[in-house]
Image (cartoon, rainbow, N blue to C red; front, top):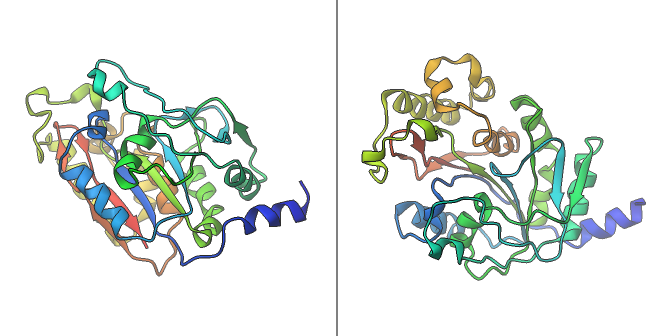
Length: 275
């Protein structure tokens, strides 16, 4: 690709007011078809920002060796879960893709090698939340995978190279859960909002304070912070999307929380808006 080609891609997304960045606690796939305070929070978040030209989503559920970006015209809806009602498997989210945005993302992240992918689609970390925000499925959506071989600082730094997209009307969404330990779910309180084990309560309180104080160092170095976060983040897949949201924050930008609740003992729905 030459410089003129890259400029043409960049020009296809006109300059806009700087877009905010979101981290969405997506929780159970059932949130895709249920009506509750969390999906209402997703809708409200969309109503409070200008309609994006396209969406770039970093989902906990596309966890790869190396980094990939979806580059197909029409990504499929992936039902990457089991044991749920047929109604959930029947859901389709037929948003278009954007090969142009995928190509620009590859260029922005250079020299990191990012490969264009034509097989993945939209997993439930993406479509189960975006469908509430933009139910008409009329906004192009691409996904960027998470390289599981890299530490949190790597993902935080990589995200900073995507900042230019915010000036082009691109909404960047990280989708995961800050507290996410499926092995320790309190099944008696699986649908009880506010239910959390002591370690989950501590993890929520500490991470919220760090987020609001701008203490991202402790969040990046979560493995050094104590037992409560080791329980809250037994594996990094749902935590790392937060790195992409925080990595895009400018010093002067505001940070706010919404959907800030524990559920089922060991999950947090806490979501973050920057800008």
